[in-house]
Length: 187
Image (cartoon, rainbow, N blue to C red; front, top):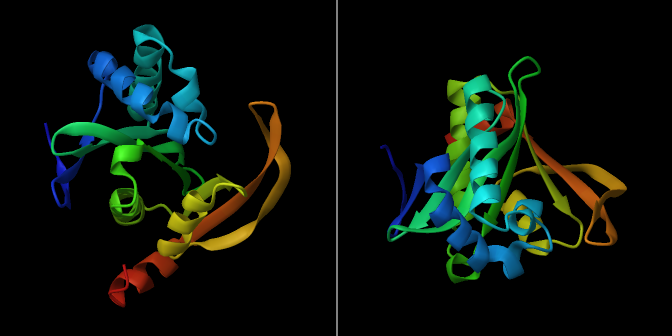
């Protein structure tokens, strides 16, 4: 199986339905930290629901409408990155991420998402890559900024989650902006 190095003992690897038990163990470690923002980390409750999420993304990958990868640190599953939406007809996609607290603050998500954006733009011809985050999720918004994304706007009270209607910020980067940023060596 392939792995993409993220440096410092970290790598990006595929994760598949047969790895549901490991995925569940990771989600249990991530739940409290990521749960306020990432439904997947709350909705995965047992091996069956873990397998269902992984199968959903395997099906999306087969249909070319989404993908999910594991972020591993020294071999341990510590987070994930995904294309929640991957729309080749409109040349746009949406990136999603989460981590468990032991891996926070190391730049793993920024480095992993850089690889995803490179692939989406250069290999798949995506023109627009989006990032949605609750206005209250300052860590996620910080990643969008570090990636050089622009804030497109706020979808007011558009996401009901855990009894609260969240304002969702839409951030994006366009292919020409991403290429210019890479050429300038500022990634």
